[in-house]
Amino acid sequence: MKKSKILVVDDQTWVRRMLLEALEFHGYEVFGASSGCEALQLASKVKPDLAVIDMALPEMDGLTLLAKLKEIDLNLRGIMISGNGENKSAKKALDKGAFAYLVKPFDISRLEDLIKTALTSRDLHREENINELR
Amino acid sequence: MNSGSSKVFEDLFTNRSYKISEDPAVFIKEGVHTVVLENNVQNEEKEYKTFNVNTMVVKDKEKALGVVVYCESEEEPESSKGSSEILFDTFSEVAACVVHEIKNPLFAIRGFLQILDNSLPEGDKRKEYIKIMISEVDRLESLVKEFLMMVKTQQNDNKGLVWVGGIVNEVVELFKNSFENKKIRLNVQTKDEAAFIWANKSQLEQVLVNLLQNAFEATDEGGSVEVAVLKDNGKILIEVRDSGRGISPEIEDKIFTPFYTTKKDGTGLGLFISKKIVENLGGKIYFDSEEGKGTRFVIEFPVRRPGAVDDRSKL
Ligand SMILES: Nc1ncnc2c1ncn2[C@@H]1O[C@H](COP(=O)(O)OP(=O)(O)OP(=O)(O)O)[C@@H](O)[C@H]1O
Ligand SMILES: [Mg+2]
Image: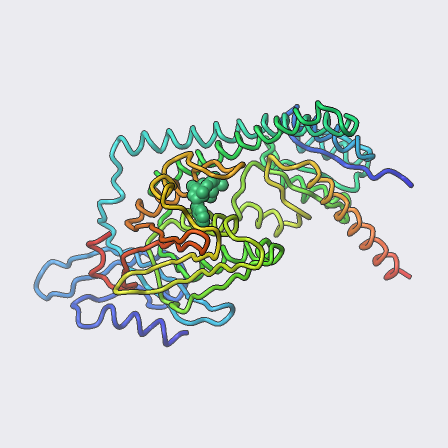
């Protein structure tokens, strides 16, 4: 089976590196970006299945980036990560089409579980679309 | 709803020599409206008085039950901040930034520890060290988080008219799953629909979260927790009752002090912060408990009549 591609966008070098290594360890093909612009460039090349995005990115914020990534691939799943534990912020992210919202610091296994669910939902969705086309 | 709101409107302003220059319809929209009242005394220079009118629609699930209007004079001295308050706001802003900056490195440390853990074989003694380090990182993180909460309780802004029943339901909703999983019955009584207090909503939520979390942790499978909003003798009471292990008389005096905890992963700041928040809002928090039987925590606020202009003076 082909490896799923995951894009990790966080401006904090070590957080990004840690997430990349943890996800690579679990068998994903991973790509890292430290800003929205970099992420968009990378995404149009590699076409990730899922993006893990920090809410508070410099310049382009996380939710704006998510919207732009979805313009490239409507089916992309976005998991937002944030230091902000307020319900308001989480709700906003979900309203804007994020698949999930995790408050830092979280257990890496939580992220892995969510990624699995998100990728399954993406596959199901894709099948539905193909069926509709038939 | 329409007729309901104009009724409130009439009650407020009839029998007074005021004329309202704004369209009454403004009150129907939720939010804070500034209204200028014109004093109608003849042969005298006209007087104007500005009020902030806080309008809120009270809903039970989807049905609208009514509208609450709350008035507050513009000339409230509250808005003028002393220099120490301004200083404090700056301090709390800095504190909030620091907390966020601490969170990121903690997260990186925690994640790398987990990666290390995954790469070690089962039964390796070093796995135990890693476990300790992860739990210490978690403890640091909750300390930092509670610290931020504490700083925020000292800020007086963001207050508004808060519907107690609504908040209780929101917080209970957050806990539903965990209670179900642990097979604890969770009962909510918010009969007193019209209980309102003047408070910061997220702070009040925080207090309820703390109390429910404590009740959850104290109660074993098969037990029950009850949350109720009551009015008693002109006071609003929020009760959180659990059938848990209770609080022994020996520790009774300690539980509200900072860092006192009997839990392995507790910070011991939950009740301390809750008390600060409640007292900051002019309320009280207390409990009674019987060891082995259960505990009842009560938050008590003096009642305020929504819409009563006279209540202004007590702000
Ligand atoms: N409902 C309750 N039943 C029994 N004991 C309680 C209850 N609520 C509080 N306590 C006791 O009071 C102590 C202090 O509570 P507090 O909420 O301040 O801190 P904590 O719960 O230990 O830690 P944290 O809130 O940070 O997780 C608890 O450790 C517990 O011993
Ligand atoms: Mg607690």
